Amino acid sequence: MNAGRRPAARNHPGALLRASALALSLAGGTAHVAIAAEYPVKPIRIVVGFAPGGGTDTTTRALAPKLSAALGQQIVVDNRPGAAGNIGTDLVAKAPADGYTLLMGTIAALAINPSLYEKLPFDPVRDFAPISRGVDSTNVLVVHPSVPAKTVKELIALAKKRPGDLNYGSSGVGGAGHLAGELFNLIADTKLVHVPYKGGAPAMVDLIAGHVHMIFATAATANPQIKAGKIRPLAVTTLKRAVSLPDVPTLSEAGIKGFEANNWYGLLAPAKTPRPIIDRLNREFVAALRLPDVKEFLLAQGLEPAPSTPEEFADYIKAEMAKWAKVVKASGAKVN
Image 1 (cartoon, rainbow, N blue to C red):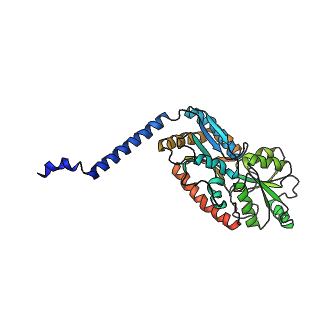
Image 2: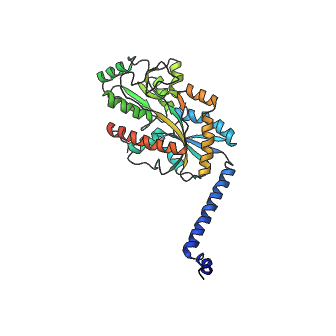
Image 3: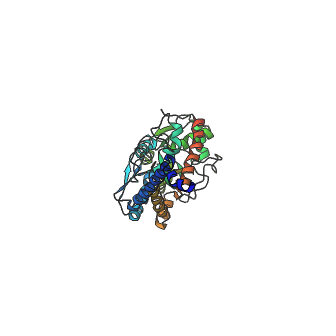
């Protein structure tokens, strides 16, 4: 008797709903697999939130041809400078989640700006799907040759003697170079004046011309000018010396104990991009970072490859947001 009732139980509304949900789930999974199998079928755009010539741009352009070869499609680098990377970052946050518009994200827009700006048009955690961390970019404190300071200690003494007179350029308000300067002011008790630009390259042009006294520049931007003798390096901002600048001390070694401002870039897609596409991009991006010629080029620019899983990159972004929130609060820096 009971056995005869079992088929009827299958028509229970709850059972039908569960069956429908399972079918939709399987269908969605099949669709994502199909999307990944076809992807990509057209050119892919990687948005860079800074002007050409800076560290973010250099990293992206070094990897673009390798990704293009691996994916079989053209990789277009799209520079959208302004607001410390916020303009380009917001563009990608609102782009279709189909894998064809990606972001070379930075510490500025993703980790610093959430605390620095009163309101952002995007959420670094909610609006993005991390693909992989890309590189750690050493920042180096460089000065114009006219600045009468050969060491960090001499620079601090000069800044205290002339409070509010010395200035430093950066790639923009909220950028790693800006916050490195704020951290310097905080620890060294100086009053360096911040002068923001729309990218590291324009800031470097003005430093070489003598319009600003110093920059906490990416090594990628600074190294060629250091070698040409147009600017003078005093220290790097990381806890270990840069591979490309082995003779330049760290700020910690130079007298500002514990100073660390690690710049980094990584690849992200808009939130809800299908996981199979994220996995494909992660696989090819990590492989490109590990190519010997790519590694050699990046290291020469002061850019150290730091590939990761999507999950590791997501956790890293959250940790960096918490770290820089403390620095921003202590510095009192704020942007409306």
